[in-house]
Length: 448
Ligand SMILES: [Mn+2]
Image (cartoon, rainbow, N blue to C red; front, side, top):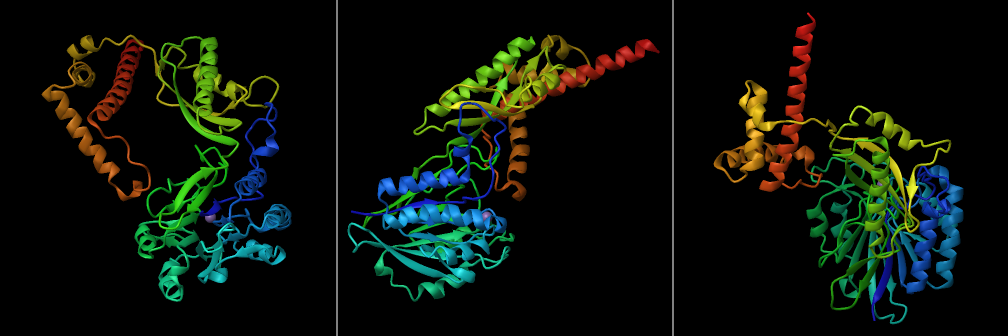
């Protein structure tokens, strides 16, 4: 026996998802937040959970009051029929609309109204002796530039921890600097509260939520725009007495966004380029289809790299790919899932040239010095000279990576081999530019 809860992060009911395709054999209404919400409730009922938790930003904003009222009411009514309670906290987007909806929908329990901590107990429906206590706080104003956690210990002092583990439900901004208008909190503050789990809303990237005290963002229920890549969905929380809280992914989103890279080196006709685009979309679809419960639609942002004779023609070719023929639809391939080209960007495309590294190294000036370095990195990567170059570059990269400004971005791979690969990429690009300048200068010289 156990207590099981379905946990949902930022829902943003009312937000419209416009994937740039109108007909790819996909029911586009099924991609919207309200469809994802309905599917989550199907999951909650099918699993027979003991409660549903919402971590704020349930509604996209005040203008969606009537829409939110209808959609929330309809699904919560289904939960009520099955005896499943719903507990929510308000976030910065629904600070005024969610309390109004909680008044209209009596079975929606808004926790921590007006910025004061509050708790509610949820019991296992099969074994009412097994309970968890949800501890929550709601945004009182659209911005709240302080941590709500200093007020928590005084509230917890009145709680009987023997009545079941405490699960925090909070919309907040985890930040080390504590400078945020949206309830800034630090990881150590959360840990210091000694709860059994912290389920958070606000940041749309889902955390792993593993470990003995699952702590982090549930993530948005769906990827609301192409920057919200990868898996999105709801979570199943399981509490079995005597064991830590467990979190598992449930009810994945029907639309997933992905970034992919395409190297066009050696591709030298527009036809071959177009075929390579389809190949990249198919490959992305095949990879996505391997996961459990794959989505029905996958939007790809493709980055094109490499050296090609098409270098000068690529901007026009890629523009054409984003608006093909007389339809405004994006290119799509496959059926399960359907993969479409959301956007395409060119990165560091180089003209295909036959570069003789050895001859350049024997010439004079900066190109010769650079060519010699590249030869060394390419052909004698274990030589003392190559290792010295890699070491020096590593120091510069670590200096940049350690800057506080970049603290929230995942650290790049700084292994010896990764640094060598960076140096070769950047070095070849720079050498091409140097040699281009040299040929421009000499042709200008001739014309004088
Ligand atoms: Mn938010």
